[in-house]
Picture (cartoon, rainbow, N blue to C red):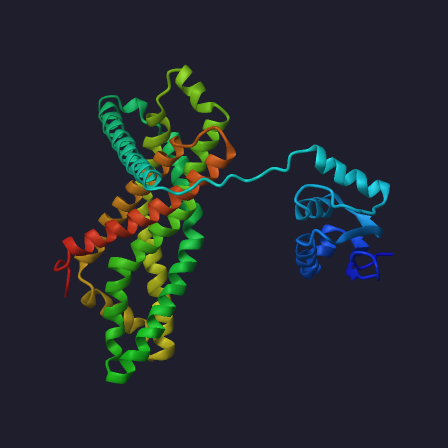
Length: 372
């Protein structure tokens, strides 16, 4: 039966006061009763107090260390304790208690850390440019030798990153279309401009949201998978085996992924935009009483065809950047599981960030293009 730990100070006439401990002195009990730790530290400051631990039923090593540190790492005078408990204290008496030596902070350390970050950024940029240069050289080689084109790797990547992503992209696009249509309808009703819901949905989805949503989903889904795939090949030494056989990493690993995503992303963009427009039509019909036929007939007039080409071109660039970033971080993975997780996370974050930056760049460059 467990007994709660207690601490009491007994004063007797003609004798020094005594600190009496009783009960089960274990780490779990002390965690539940933090006042006992404070009581031990306060009592240990008085060197005139005697200690009586004979009524302690259980004493574990952690609590013995706590008492030993409170006593200043020496036995108090007049200590009364059971022999089995005294052996725990002798254990800590014979061992050096580890002391954490926390490093201080200095301006030199901050400068070194900042310089290391800058060198790391420039190193990553250099590696990224190297991958792009090697990709251009491989493309030139394949133009001269079409028989070396890795059709099987390209087709597998198209299936993995494109076909298997149709479900999630359609679902997200459909829901985003509903949300955007519903929120826009609430504002358009105030001005009696319900018909302009078609212009808002058409331009925002076909030109911006469709390509951007597809790119973010592919970056999180396929980009991370590509990085992890190359990282696993690093851990299992498959990359070293390819090098030993004289097989180019960029030709068999980088180029198929870049080509597949560059082809797949415009198609996924069209698919996501179509799903978002269907969701927008569904919401517009229920909230603004705009029929499906009216929506479809008005859409080509509201959205010039040039916006479709801008969205497709933007998606192709998104796919190119996602694949390059995924391969870049994949080759940075070291042969351990910790590096695999860290670089995969960095790949997803970097890919999504670059996608948004490229989208902002396209918005600035084509600001006045394709407007009705």
